[in-house]
Image (tube, rainbow, N blue to C red; front, top):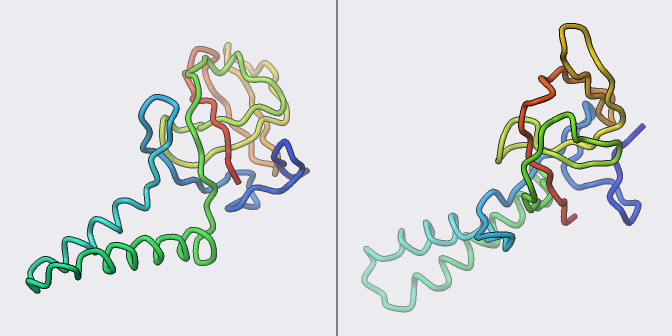
Length: 145
């Protein structure tokens, strides 16, 4: 049982245990800001000491391009947009969420069921299983690829 996006594709960065590596933790409201700005800024700033006025621009572009290569081919990751924060008890099969807070990997719910000691057992597509408090707040996400 593998996780699927609404259009039927397997998300980029899908791990065998059901987790999906993500990028895109920086956002203003619901508008994601590409995390590629960090390597672009770093490469651009590294060019400043050379005192060549135009050099930061191609260096920033190179930093962004290297980041794109990294998240597509070296360590595939899916861009994600955080949606609302909900208690784990509100998760339904098919929901995408971040089990460890506002950043980090995402997973798709396969099934939820009660567990002993007033806990909630969450099975993920891919086979991983989590046991959470029903009141534990998780972030729903929308994967973009």
